[in-house]
Amino acid sequence: MRRVIPYNKVSYDYEKVLNEFVSALKNRLGECLVMVYLTGSYARGDANDNSDLDVFCIFSTINQYVLETVGHCARNTSIPYDLLEINTQSLSVNEYKSKIFEDWSEYAVTELNSVLLYGEQPIEVENINEKIQLSYKKNMADIIMSIRHYICVDEPKELLTHKKISTYILKPLMFALRQERFCSTGVYPLSTESLLESYQDDNRILVEYFLSQERFETDILSDHKETLMFLHDKIQNFLENDI
Image (cartoon, rainbow, N blue to C red):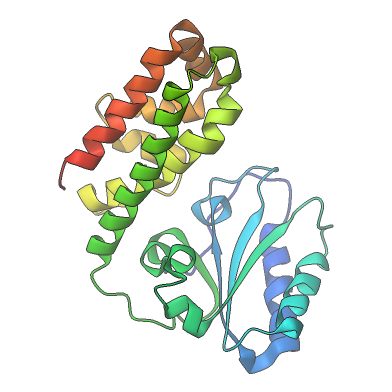
């Protein structure tokens, strides 16, 4: 897991807020606090002023006091919560290590996608390539099922806005494509721009659709079924091709 938070082009002092949050947790919860890590757009250097700080907190045990303390610390930093939200998830060490919670912990992905703010990784990550490949294939499967839904119900093209498709298809796809790049090249692109640069074929269009509302909506309004099938077939190719 990385130790340095990348630069983000935002208006807020996010590093100060994170330091305040972690310091407050340590003071109030002491040895119960095992690990804190930042994930999401701020951990990639891809954040904007509307982005939340996505933070996972791992504890030796979870109880009401721990959860209430996390919430209190998140809401009481030098920047008002409604301007810069700390979006927290809390797990016990046993939960973090368990298969039941693995869709939340995703500790193999965490090694690539996150920044350690406090503590140490409580589990040794083995066979990281194998785990990342399985994760990205599962993510691609979820995305292709969403696309099939829109095609089956013949969603009117006027409703297939960039915001809507980004939420359910394009944003999750960017995460899956980062994982694919790691499996294919050994490099995990942190920013969306570096993800775009990593593709030299027409897979670039998948990233361009996410980056450009105008590009996506021009194509979707021109022929929404063809555009959705283009996305569908591209993702199907990823699912069918072994790396």
